[in-house]
Image (tube, helix red, strand yellow):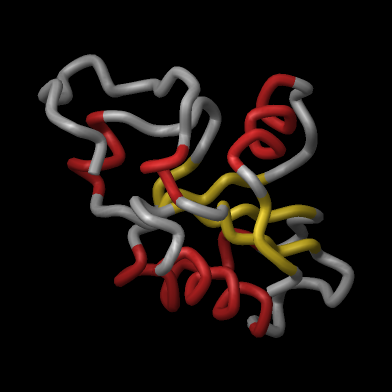
Length: 115
């Protein structure tokens, strides 16, 4: 893991269409109810078996509700041998509880809190 990244910096990446993979590690129902636009859902418990999906990524940002589990996820991704050494891997500081911007949701998701 390289560092933590602020919610404002993540928002700037999203708005600028930067080449970044935003990985939301919450369970699918929580992801469906609200997530950062353009993010992908790889629940934490499936990360070890799905980490190969991130091969070739140049920049990965992990996201969770409070910014704690995403630190562990970022460390796991950063240590994976399929992810190049120069890949930037960061955890979003404060998690979705600090996200002050609009969230996307799935059409059929319930409108509960996103975490």
